[in-house]
Image (cartoon, rainbow, N blue to C red; front, side):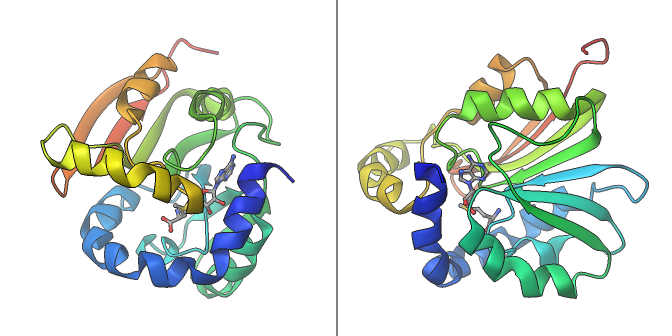
Length: 205
Ligand SMILES: C[S@@+](CC[C@H](N)C(=O)[O-])C[C@H]1O[C@@H](n2cnc3c(N)ncnc32)[C@H](O)[C@@H]1O
């Protein structure tokens, strides 16, 4: 397993405890994002983690979900089974997705690109498996443009990176750099996290 997967395996047993407070604050933003999951579309969700996002999914969707960590996915299993729809959860590296080109109409991420070691490789893979015109909906740690929060995030980063996420990646720039069209960026909580709506250009294979 890659270093990324084993690191997250180590975090799995206390992840829900660490994330509990943030999940409560983030609930409205996450619900708003996932409300865009459409019933008749092929949806990819990356990365599932312990499945804390699942309660915010609208019911009745058919979702392929991936995560690199078997331990995180093990913890997600009861939430996957309780979901009133279909989630097929598979262990997979976002940088090497086992899906054919142009498989999905919609892709969602949630605190994913703060966590993958090579965000540009992950974004390139998402783009490959998306149909032309498919949408990318993200809820991501991005760093803040506000002082002193940007400084605080810089200071926290070495500790956070050790247990999992990097708090100050410029994911908006990365998404644009990967060739997506950014349609909207909605800042939350002093700009520390953002909802990003993007699209794979129509003419792109
Ligand atoms: C901060 S957690 C977010 C999980 C969940 N979306 C949530 O909000 O609770 C980040 C997740 O990304 C996964 N991850 C890290 N690197 C990855 C990679 N290269 N491919 C797929 N998943 C990865 C980790 O295993 C972890 O479950």
